[in-house]
Length: 381
Picture 1 (cartoon, rainbow, N blue to C red):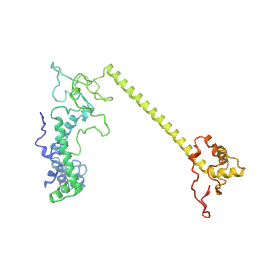
Picture 2 (cartoon, one colour):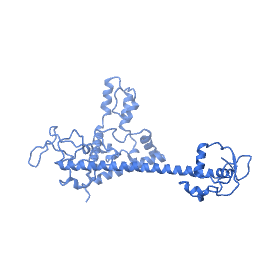
Picture 3 (cartoon, helix red, strand yellow):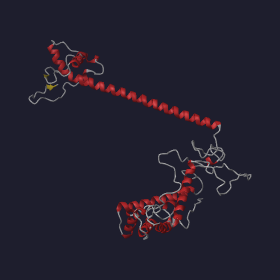
Picture 4 (cartoon, rainbow, N blue to C red):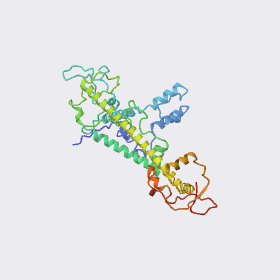
């Protein structure tokens, strides 16, 4: 059986759709009526304000607008009308945040103060409790309670649908005079759909993926870590220092932190080792590519060198040593390939190492031919 929570009041028609009100919907935007910020800006202009247009975005910030205190008093008496509806809307937003576990009292639980005119907190024996923490469960959700999930979901779905309708209007443009009025008021004038700021905004951030905690009745029982006698506590919270963890809990927390630190150190070491292995592989590939290119360039040069030496084959080591001593001496000479593959030193290629076998080399390496030479066997080094 669904137990739905009704949060309607006499002020609801002047509140946004995020708390169950109509403001922000297409139907309300089509209503031919002004809105409080525009009314206040118009009144400020009539009273001689220096920059009345700035009040269209926040009518309460009127400091320095008026030259006489009488005009400012008249403005404030009229501009502040309707603040009760905004205050109630902010209170409803706080309530929704508290149900979802993202209220500031969820993140930083505070002790109840019996001296501020509120109800006196007593235990079951009638003794006053001065160190009781109302939100002792911390950033846990209360969506397992009957009606809470339905209440939050209904308003969230409604607000999202209204936002979709207004953005479709912005994307496609108005199609009739009613939509043109809604487009003008909502998008051109930028009419606020809710209070510009509240007293207690939610401290939740999109980057914090650890809170709120999961919902469920288990955390409300005394067989869990948090209960009324041992409420949720955040490290470094100066406003809540009554409850201290037991030695066993402190030992568990210390062990968990040590394990997390060891795991982080192991992951860092593994990443460093992987980076070293990757760098070594890249160096090996670079050396292999350089030696392979050197062998391809060496084949015609070694052929001519062998012919000039009377047919004695030149080893790869001798060739590389020769190229290191004079790498660019014959870079502009043309050498004609007279004999087919393999070169005279092909039998020694297997001892070179990463260069590879003779079968891995092509018998002809295409290269740029000089403008005055048309022979295929001629290449420029």
